[in-house]
Image 1 (tube, rainbow, N blue to C red):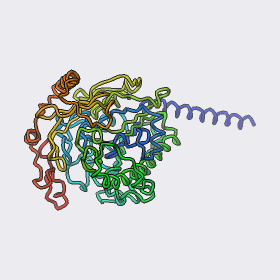
Image 2 (image 1 turned 90 degrees about the vertical axis):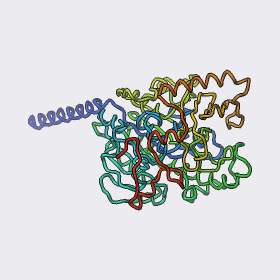
Image 3 (image 1 turned 180 degrees about the horizontal axis):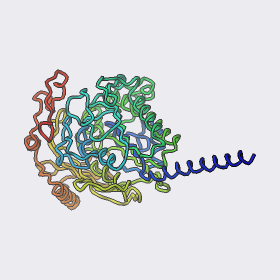
Image 4 (image 1 turned 120 degrees about the horizontal axis):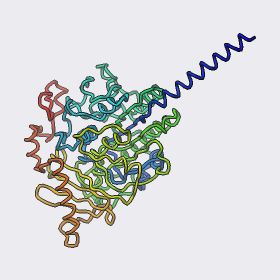
Length: 491
């Protein structure tokens, strides 16, 4: 009897020690996890919480109530590769040379995943990459994944119902078994489950390619939610484009609602695994799209109007408490994201990062604070080849745009949210214009941007556009004839 009692006491004591040890292990992991959800071509206004009268995004609407909402977040260069390079490096496109699509981001660049990995994080990537520059379906080996260990991605595809990808180090091209936002987030959810009790924190970049066109490929169930005739169009869409815009918006919104559902599954998984209170979660996009605004046809981006430039940016972090649901009107531009995440996780910011650490503003959100955020169109290509290069400054009230020939646009976004009244060179706005121009010049000087035209930058970085398509040739890789173009030649 005594021996049984002694053994029982000993077992309880050992079990308690193990439990305390487990608790101590979890306490030792003081760094929060990071889940960064990057969508493609999702306009900053195309969400229920942002005031869109059409779209249904219940999961992100709820997430906005739990997050800090940067209402004036912008893409530093509103097109895929430049945004993604700036996101990973915290540098401006004119500094890295990553200012057009289908370039290879050099391995010498220190990237987001490499920094978090160096700080003890596990790293994982899903979906659309668009930073490898070796063709859009070529296998990307580990040394070109910029610090990501777990890998289920592809350079670029928008075949949402038969989306290809590579599974880690398997060189065989595979296909997601269902509509890609659902399939990708299911795999991401499994990764979270597998790492929920890890001693290491994890950094996940989940890159979902919707609601980027083609829009007609959206699942039928979601398209039926948006009868074309019922859609309310903004006043800056001309009558002549309305039929096409309605057709494209039906699929655009359908993709958005389906993607919202997929993201909702991820957010629910974080809650079910009891990870949400130790995880930074970001929802954003690489750029928007014009969708007929100002007479610019659907699919087009790269421009400085809000439809292309402004993106959603919601961030939830541990101990957000009373700050949940707050709004920051001060603009944020893409290079600010990396240093801000590093600031929130107390990781040293590399000296050559050019963005600003906004961690204090995230933790102390104030809708009245203002700042000036820089955006640029360095070498417009493809559908935008006839557009001039530009630099733009955005504050919480104004957007100011300048080309190499001089000031081109000035909008008061509070009085004119659809940017229909160009105030540039108006006498009553001369002082405002001058202040914004001074700010633009100062910021360009800080990053050493000479602000030349397209040809200047193509020549400086030795890039060659295909003569017909006026873009970097990525399609020749499918024929074994591709030539990698990169800021570091020979990579």
